[in-house]
Image (tube, rainbow, N blue to C red; front, side, top):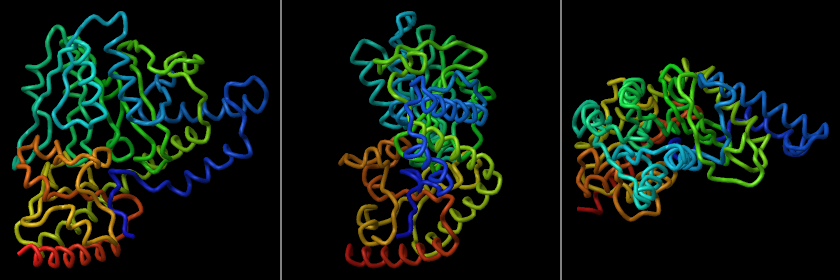
Length: 389
């Protein structure tokens, strides 16, 4: 199978696997135990977290390890908004956020918080899918506790101007959270430079293992208090109880280091593969349209390609091209029958959204794979379109 779904998850890099393996069977001590085996595991975790912090431009004690970005989003949003010292009752987010953010704020809305969903630029604008800064500014008021804006969108690759958004939030006394799941490891992410207060990410999106995530809490400019969401042991300064996973944390640090060190080379390479795929498809299929920012606009993830087909539904295309792995939407909302909320939020009709697919090109994809995938996709489209007529 040719794997073109790197927004859903990525292959664990063999170098990451190698770094993790000793912590499963050779050095298996509980990092919270006081004997030498435990101290060895604790030291490995400390070094890994320090590396993660350095790579993200954060302080060592700002990094909280979680099970993934969904838990990180819950801890960030719910943890901050429900802290006893936090009295504001308004949350601002964006219509195109991941369900791991939208569902959390919906729960809080049911608990009495007021929520504002800010729209994004509409298709076919060059910045389609990027949050409307004017509307965001208008939405933030004196009672706004938290603003949550995804750094890079998981379906259409739209990149938000995070430093500009942080300045707007802080001017009104609100804090900024970003679900940076798709950004970390793909584009430069620096918590201090962008002045973000809370940042969520997960290792399996940047060639690490599933089940390992992180939340950066605060930076040198502001202190952030969170109400713990998992209690029962007091680990991680009481912010997130539970035995820590040395293998997963070492692997996450290794994966992030590999991404940051290779980013200068990988970004143009992956972008070129994305454009090769697009050129092949649009040269053979009349009427296909790109969803999200323009490919050359500079505010789109390098490996992201989301397109709408002229006649057939995305699911039918996927079934006909079963040798390939790609997507008709977010993997985390794949069980939903409704069309993509991201695509309808940028102005696509329900029919257009159902005729859309997403490709995510990554580190392990090759030119030959893109050539082969293009042939398979074009042939599959011809067969399904002929049946549709």
